[in-house]
Image (tube, rainbow, N blue to C red; front, top):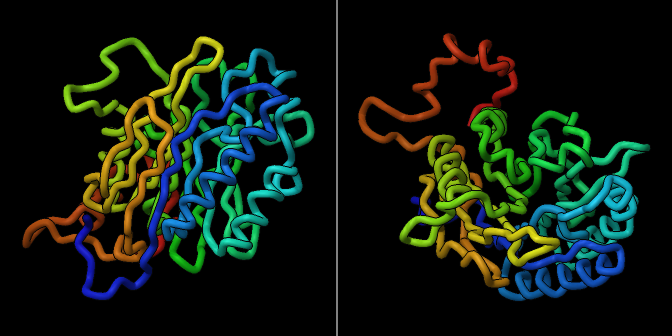
Length: 299
């Protein structure tokens, strides 16, 4: 558990939902219904910040761009978005979900944020994995951070975690938590270490640690059209260590973690002379890395 004051300023029970949505237009309603069951289960356990996997209502393995387009919907007017928004409103919670977004003739792999008042905002995946490049357009919305009643929420999607610039840009804009929607796929071995953790889990822990930020990372499980998925959903504290368990690579499950979101704004002093945010040499590398001075908000 992360260090926290005696009384939490913004106490949140977070939930990362791990399940097995299946591709196929005929499965879309079933996938959506399954998300409802799992969201309600998490809410019944006290969760107020819930994260679903990438492409949670459609499955992942689109054979053609035309098939992906048939699964896609507009945001926020599409039926899945409307249903999720209504559920977030009725259960008075914050919900992050991944879906295929249609915008004119373009398709985006998008993460959407809903709250007690409905739709809040979206992030379009900027780093596309493998055949995603044949289907989706790279995201064009940058890396937005959304102010909410419980804290500042940033979003990323799956392969983005391999690019350290993404969580860093969200962190320097003042995000308190990053919600990561994922379809981590099996790649050439070794996939897991002796403890059963996958590289994506370690990358999430590392991004959490070096940016002093909470992560709620939801992955999917199962197989689909020859592809297999890694599971290993997790929630991390600002120190990078998992809060609670890391999910198995095969089981549908919900991972929970009690967090004090705005405690991320208090940079931990590691010793008398060092802490991560203050030690950044922005004078040397921010311009070279493409960071814009003025984006960061004080924590």
